[in-house]
Image 1: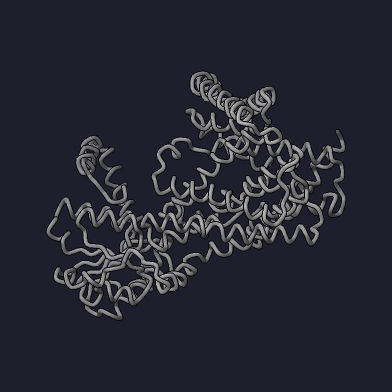
Image 2: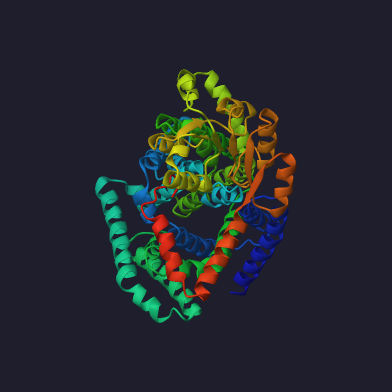
Amino acid sequence: MSGLIHDLALSIVMAWILGVAAHLARQPLILAYLVAGFVIGPSGLKWVQSQQSINTIAELGLIFMLFMIGLEIDLKKIIRAGNVILVTSAAQIFGCFALGLGLFLLIGIPLGDRRFDAVYLAAAVSLSSTVIIVKVLYDKFELDTLPGRITLGVLVVQDLMAILFLAIQPSLNDLHIDVLFLSVVRVGALLAASLLISRYTLPHLFQLIAHLPELVLVGAIAWCFAVAELAELLGLSRVMGALIAGVSLSTFPYALDVTAKVTSLRDFFITLFFVALGMTIPVPTPSVLTLALILAVFTWASRFVTVFPPLYAMRQGLRASLLPAINLAQISEFSLVLVQIGVQSGHTTPGVAGAASTAFVVLAVLNTFLMMRSDAATRRAIPILKRVGLRDLDHGRAENEETTAERKRRILVLGFYRIASSFLAELERRNSALLEQVVVVDFNPDVYRALQQRGVRVQYNDIANADSLVHAGITDAEIVISSVPDSLLKGTTNEKLVRQVRMVNPTTKIIATAEVLAESHMLYAAGADYVTIARIDQANELIEVVAAAEAGLLDELRAKLDAQLHDRQEILP
């Protein structure tokens, strides 16, 4: 026991030291944990050599990691997912698996005689890293963009497919239809029972202890291990049970409260899992490095082959088809989980797991770098794709230019987000005649189609491109509005837009937006005629609300707002 505590202490200390270094180097923390395990493990400094300690640390981390992944799987989102996400997910997951399986068999990766290396590797390269991708998209303020929503939707469906793989994984040695059917039935029964208990029993129990945070935490952990042990009794794996425990808890009323309380433990056990996984990575041999390189290159190529075509075929535009492919070009931490389960089951070897881990590290570094620069990459790629014959949503625009020009472009809206959406809704309510003189310039295909359906003139163009601004009619516009804040603009800023517009049209009235107070001075210096600052407008509204509350007029003020919101239909709700 003292040996296990000693090994745990070494694991946590080394993970923290290298985690700080990774943070300073702006690298994913998972990489630091893998390296920490490799350094102190049997292949490194040999500070931790007990296979029992390594297995215990790995299993604990794995069970809790799958529990947390289950907590974050939103079944409602999967059910509500649109055709774009469902079709893209199916093409990416099944396409990558089929292509991967074919490639790995072609290069001699074993399949058969109780060895399933090719199957595990094909499953591994079909999944993308939720942790890394969501973190980068969050840092770039792109979670709520169209490419961001598509990326998140595909990640959610990938998690669901991983559950199905875990369901059949224990039966790979005897994969007959009846055995496969029995495994799926067991998983279905366990999931149904867990969902019923979490729906009708757990809420009452958690309501009794809601005022005792420590009991909420202990209750969540107890549920995790109870379902894990039940899964073991049913002939499934504990990690499968932990995943189902998380999925079932994600649907009940206290899910957010449980997730918040378990987060610290999640981080601790995830750290343990990846450190233990790093301990199992052997010193890379030429064959392991070669396989890792093949995995990395295949992951990259397969994402563009399976993600870009369906999105492009569904008329999402070149940009919105390229960005999700770039975002998803990363092997998942769940992939490492699957391969590690394969090693524990005897279905594959530590060498295959080492190659998958190495490929994960390489792709995590390279793809994080590219994702941070994905906008610039797509800007360079789109002209090339157009030259080879691919059409964007602006194709055929020249044929209609004369008709469009006949209607005066008095107000030009550069970029379309929530403020612009509310602006058009207010114009429609107050002055529909003025709405006919508005032209929106944006490259979101959903916005493009929605505005066309509403009869609002829109041009599919990149406002960061100076030529696009001229083509959009900047030279003739009387009023130019830029309402998208700098944090959401791609490839430009409000200051750059103001300077470009003022250079082309010295007489137009320019309205720009600022997030930081100091930005207003820069925008006025660049040539803006008026700068809107949303926080000031919201502060003034709050003052009115407080004054109404003190005067006993809050109900009247709310009724006024409700009347304004009644039957309001915005492009971006």
